[in-house]
Image 1 (spheres, helix red, strand yellow):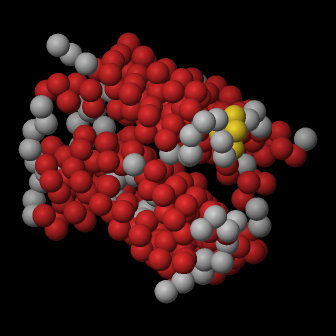
Image 2: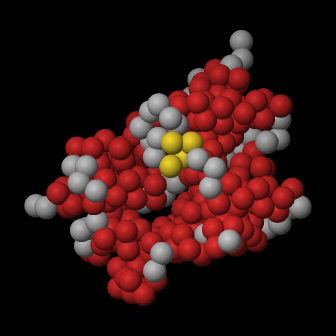
Length: 101
Length: 217
């Protein structure tokens, strides 16, 4: 088996295990109230971190590149309550435009 | 599961489908350049179904980083799904097989559109959104594997700028309370602080420490 297929197999099994942990082991059971309190803000914490890493990380470097302009344009679109698709198109267009300059 | 919830999930995620398709296609192009064939890329999209981890895997293999480094990086990038998976557990019922299969539709985006202010998820919404994304992600990968080089560099079209934007658009409606805003600010600060010092994936996992603002006595 090539290393490509080995990687596909291991990453696949590992990811399936990570995604299914909760539903398989704890499915349908109520979590302790204190844990639910913590998890109630998991979404904002994780999504904010994803915004930062997707916009400003390049490997282990913090960079300011055209993606930051795309993010700025997206922020304006979000404040103006633009729909999801419009936010994404505006951000991609701003990124491509700044890169082409 | 109410059919209406499933439909709501499909509708909530429709705006993301062009990006999911394009990203799937660009993953296949990247995979081929790294020596990972179209069939392997498609199998990976269908089973792993996690964009950043898939890109990390093939780019590390392609730059000669080795199998172990590729696998470790991908699983670190996906480690956040362990936390997400536990948080959605109360909503998933039915047989073991059913819970195992349905949980594979958990991705950042399907979870973000289905999560409630108290941290619970509407399972039907998550499944509708996840299934829709899976279809576009997988067919996009097939398209990229088939059309290949004709697509060119997707970053020329600003695809890399689309991702921070989509996460921002998913984050905005989550900022409904002072606690949520604080968690987001802490998560972002942790990510900024760790990017220069840790492998990709670690800053995101560490950002879950932002959850501590949800501590109640």
